[in-house]
Image (cartoon, one colour):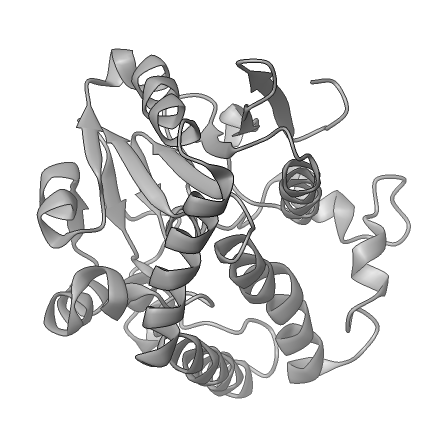
Length: 289
């Protein structure tokens, strides 16, 4: 469990269940580059291990994840080439390019494409979600096969209201909420509670907050009892059905629109920021509730 800086990795039931836990509770498990890279490594680790049948993705503390890291000291350090904590991924995968190309490639590799890989992991993945979950926190749980939530969990993508953006890089909103609810949520920044999310089909089970970890583990044990080939073919059958319906292509298209949205604001603000600010009608995200 000490192999990672930003998460923990543990196994249960003689290794048949692996639990990956985001471990930045001080910052509500906001996703900096170091966490995302470690998370990808942990998923690959679980995928390679033939003993693992089910993976649980959890978050330490009061909330599963508050989304992208928008400004912690660790975020600043990992982007500064002169800092000893500079993360090497900021010098590859487009990190040395300029302007929109740099932003597009970075978001493609570390926000969008990683979520696509995790969706297609060759194991069943269960999200264990609690507390207020924002924006890119939804990306993580939507990449999972099943979502178990605490009774106090809420789900919000406020980037339309606060940043003038059309949603996150992994645009699963219409698939998870339906077209009209997705539009309303993004236009108004509204929150969906666990019960509504269950009624919409996004959440599978709701458990009391104090029992979430234990109940999720029991839930994973029931799934781990299935033959591995059966579980894999069920996952692949459902995922392929979604992709035939246009899931993959819609994600690709929406990611392109997301980058156009960024470029629009970057042009307006002369490259200083790539999102809307208060003078363009956005609600100040640092002050908003």
